[in-house]
Amino acid sequence: MPLIDRIEGYADELTAIRRDLHAHPEIGFEETRTSGIVAEKLAQWGIEVHRGLGGTGVVGVLKGKSGNGKTIGLRADMDALPMEENTNLPWRSTIPGRFHGCGHDGHTTMLLGTARYLAETKNFDGTVHFIFQPAEEGLGGARAMIKDGLFEKFPCDELYGLHNAPDLNHGEIAILPGPAMAGADFFDIRISGYGAHGAMPERSKDAVVIATSVAQAIQTIVSRNVDPLQAAVVSITQIHAGSAYNVIPGDAWLCGTVRAFSDSVRALIRERMRAICAGIAAAFHCEIDVDIRDIFSVLVNQEEHSKVVEEVARTVVEPSKVLTRATPKMGSEDFADMLQKIPGAYFWVGHDGSVPVHNPGYVLDDKILPVGASMFARIIETRLPVSAHA
Image (cartoon, rainbow, N blue to C red; front, top):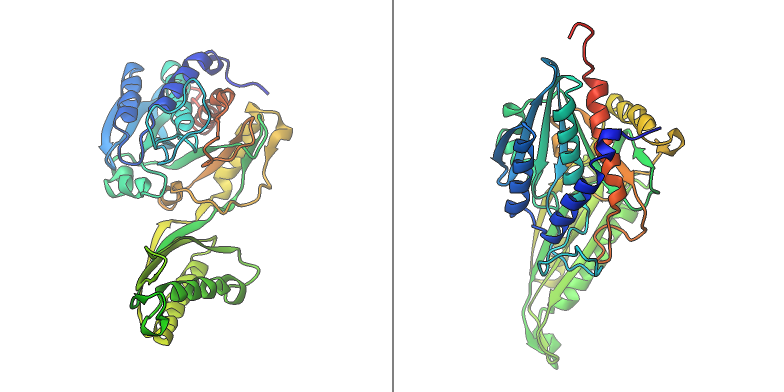
């Protein structure tokens, strides 16, 4: 089945926008240039523009042929990652330590393509809110926009978001009803022991030994405390201690993440982490401080809206390429916080290339820009059809 011809006609311009954003990446809450381009484009197309929600967030408001009818929100994230790019593309990042390694430049461009198309055609009744969100990459951009009154100022009946997917093939679209992405906590564990000479360990409370004991013990939580039919991950991703070959450090800290599809499982893991650290602190006569922070909610797609995505996808790509039995992802996405407020769905758009997101060699395939834009546009035209008397 076809993409929307008019949107396909924008392909070169969309590619140019996307590559410009890619060359000038901005990390969470610093998306000043990006949000400025978004606001300028929306205004150019006659869309009402609101800036400053959640810091650098932008919301565009567009009414259809009739203002009567439901209001639907479409969301794209704008931020890049604090990492180096290693692609050597002509449009590679021009800013050291900043890289659109997750494809949010593509998501922003897709939603801009949708906005232009709907502004030009207005083939719908009701209202569309184009939500351009900052700081998705673990910094709480969705929660910041919600705290700033996003859904009080711009109420929505339904909400949709998407993500590029290099693990799918070009032309494939995946939607998973129910829990689709894991909730996530980040944690810091700080150990305060007692330092000593490397030749005199008996005089120390060795923070390295304590840290390794904590790390090993925490790895028993999933295997011995969590129901084996419940998926969960506890990963220690950083250990810091020491400064010299002959000094036993008195301090150490560990950092990492917890992932699960159930809030009760996440609560269990938090409780066990704290209990294990308290027990090890008592055993080694030291102090261990545990800070666990809820960063991402579990992303849950509503059945009704997942069905909408599935049916629309069959009109945009070949029906055989619409995947509804996709495996839930252990990755996390802060669109989950918006879906806790407004019912909706989040889906994936496959593209050429197999390098995963968050890899320094990741490359977004620009051919998917009209695909994502057509998906969003068809969702609006399907859910907000023009009435016969309009």
